[in-house]
Amino acid sequence: MPWLEQNRLEWKKPEWILFLFTFLILLWFPLMNGYPFVYYDSWGYAGGYPGTSRSPVLGLLMRPAVVLGGPWGYALVQTAVTAFALVFLANVVLGGKYKYSYYAALVVSGVGFISGYLMADVWALIGFICLFAMATGLSYPVIVVLFAIACSAHYGNFPIFLATAGLFLFFARQKLKFITLVACCLVGALALIYAGNLAAGQGKIRPRLTGWMTLAARISTDMPELIDEKCARDPDFAFCRLTNEIHGWSEKKRYARLIWDGREQLNLSWGEFDQACKEFVLFSLRGHYGDQLAAIAQDTFRLLSHYDLRRGLYPNEGAWFFEAFKKHAPDGLPQYMSSWQQTGKFLPIFNRLKKPLALTFAGSMLLCLAYVVRYWKRREQDIVVKLAAFALIAILINALFIATVNGPFVRFQARIGFLMFFPAAIVAAKALAGLRAFKLFKRAG
Image (cartoon, rainbow, N blue to C red; front, side, top):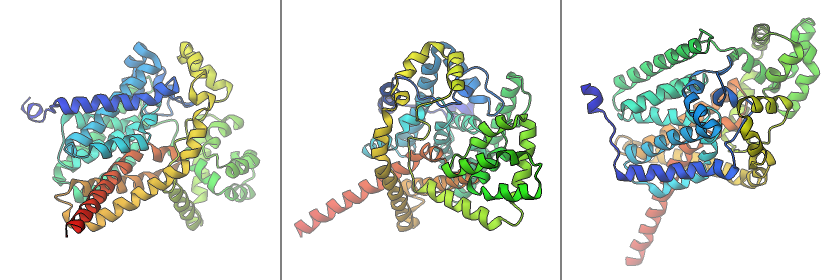
């Protein structure tokens, strides 16, 4: 096809060398751990057919890799795709000018933890990179396909990609083409989900784990007093049997416990639980708009002011976790039990790095914001201005969406941290180079 031939992506030796280095750096994180990083619902992606609580696409696409190589097969493929996207951004979109900044962002962001994770988290980063590439006019077929897969990898990716595309439209080189590509990718992603559900025997797009459930879990944790108010008016409401538990989860900021523990304690089907969550969410909106906005603002600020790689990498507990592990990867359990994640060796390292990383993350946002404001008039010529603006928009949209739907899950912010650290490292390098040149000029004068 002529269009495919004209838009074929050709990599030369520098790209392949950088890809190899990037792949090895990313792979070093799970290798250091001794096993790919595992979360309690990792098997929805790296196990058999995925459950109805998530998109089936990534689990089905990764199935051949899992069959051939188990969890390591999944981690290798996901790491390779992540390395491809990162190298595409650094060498194709930015022209390979900022190698040192690239390597610094690669290490500081800890993206190797995210790519080596048996979850869909890193596909948010991959999707954002593809979205930025398309906005700058680099709509190679492989990038378009990767973006569609990234959209379909997780239901939550749809709104954050769509909102970011809308806000970044001002910067897009060919606006109509960009809108068309994004729309086609979103439709294609829905088609992939529907086809995946048919293949998995589910036959529908709508997930079992709906937005009502995640919203109810977030609202009950941020505003537990609402369950008291609801039960005072309707003592027979299902969640009234969990009043003490909800207050306990709120004190400990355990945002998802209503879904994973509460439903089982109430002995409700997913459909019944969904209806109860919907009823509670609608009740919470009656006369509580100010409280809702305040809670969302507080959670958004927490996401923007923290960069915590620990979340999701704690040692796993519970008989159900190990039963699922034995079911999906029985041969890997001894190896996982001795991993740094499960033995807790990472936690002291993370605890030392928590504050420096949070300060670096906040400083990166301020640095990028200052650069965009200072060089706004050069936005058409300076790709770094566009990347910094895109990173700020993506980080803000991601934080706002996660805070609204899930609560301050800092893991979901760290998954795209590279987007913020990379342009900030470039800006810092430019500033240092300018300062050095100024000192030399001053000496010469």
